[in-house]
Length: 151
Image (cartoon, rainbow, N blue to C red):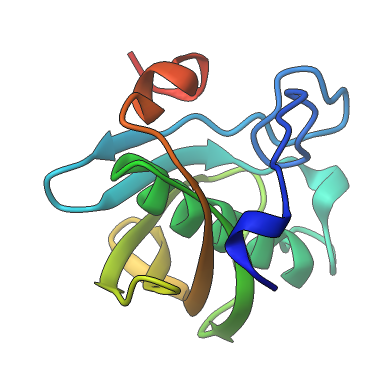
């Protein structure tokens, strides 16, 4: 997929971060452009269970993926996921405050290598690595996504 072949349109209906999605996660982020990181804190409700009281693996993957994407956005890049590898270290409970962190590991130009962790009380419950494909660059990326940032 060539980066210039796709125009990304944001209708604010993203399952992970869109405010218009009635069943979405509505994630908000704290970004650090200097370090290429994004952090989101969230509590996942029971209706996103896999097993009782445990967050579904697809939701865990979504949390990590979105946070790694926002790490890229912190440095101006709007990306799509090329590949993602998730490791599930321990069950992730619903109803608890989770901290998800994404970071840029290396910008290779045509791809950006990222990593992410999902933690509860400082313990890593899941981690991921992804290759993200830059689609658009905007100097004012933080202005564009300002409604999705933690004040």
